[in-house]
Length: 226
Image (cartoon, rainbow, N blue to C red):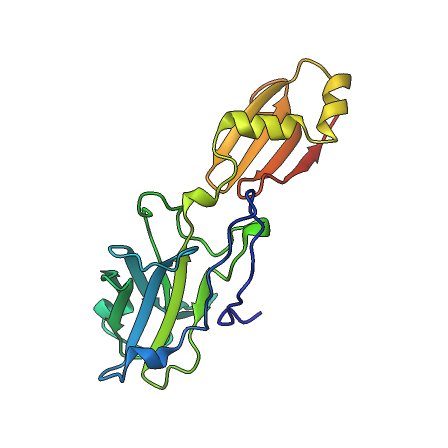
């Protein structure tokens, strides 16, 4: 699926009152005409679309790799142009002057207070509003424009060990299994977007392992060893 297509949707929310913000596909034309070749990365709050200032953005030139000669940039440039870093401005933008548009970005962190670390692989469950990275439409030959989002911690439904244990203990497979197999210790690991609760005779070897999505509290069994 092309990440540049952002949809207006309603997210399932415990209170039933949360609505995802209206999002139009990012349009590089609103950046204005480019005087030089540039790569623009814009960082927004995932739910409010508020620009986030002061977020570190790093870009790196793409490479080609093979077994014999290793990796080299797809275009030859001075070392200072192969990797660059900036912080976003008041509009949430980091603007890089680049020799070409063959670059990718990442947010090295740490994330601003109240936000999860940047990732494009979060399983947001029913709370998905739009993609976490969106490429602009036609930015012209001199502009590459990427919008990315940081996920606020307020989206998490599971934030403590006790909550993770309660969800795991209530799993329909775990309830009868515990009744038939008393004496197992529970080990809680993780935090942030996902938790794991292991059931074993010690803290390393588990007979059952429950994975919990911290966004919506859904749980699944990862191991079934007797």
